[in-house]
Length: 299
Image (tube, rainbow, N blue to C red; front, side, top):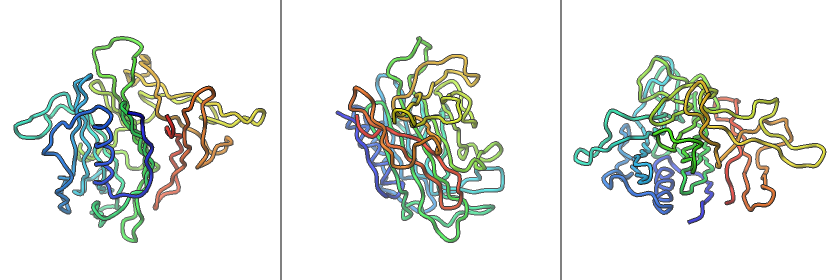
């Protein structure tokens, strides 16, 4: 099936269902049917899905965490989305083993104490592309008057169709970037760590410049004043944090900088192809920092 672009506003559990159901329609399989989003108990983490990709023999889990975690030492607590890769699955106890590579996206946060946000009633405004290779999601949480550290984010799960060399690892990676970097976790609960780059099963790290490389220039992508065309480079994905072993490039997204002729809402069409990318610039209710990315919009 062809990939699909979605946008709108949903609670996190419904958004997880939308992504998981589309991945299954694209050829993935349900990794564990006991994992669903029917149990939306406030303060629990039971709204979740498990997907299995047979070619890479890998499990992907998407979990709505309404239980809050310390996401930066003892300064901030947050609720949000946990994305994890697993090499095996316990089909008896219906859970993953200790061996997993994950990231945590702390959409709903508060300084020094538990957020009041209810993940099952608070909506995310989102833009999402899903196809057989994975998905790219950009989302902004609904504001409330009590929680003061809500963040927006982009997260990408992608299977590179063809790597540059055989490395004995999967073809997947997960890239995540928040609009407020103060969320980086180096001391808190391991479940609450936002890993900007996750390459199963070799490394995770908390720095966006390690393991993925965007075009290093004043503008990551720009519109020419001469011919009106957009020039950009797809991000390079590496097999190591030192960025000495490139394995391929993303087909789902690229970064742009505001000020280079591109703004939120612009559509970039690829010459000689039907493919288009939608430019999205997103701040959050509690921070003016922005995530600026163009995500796949038309196949």
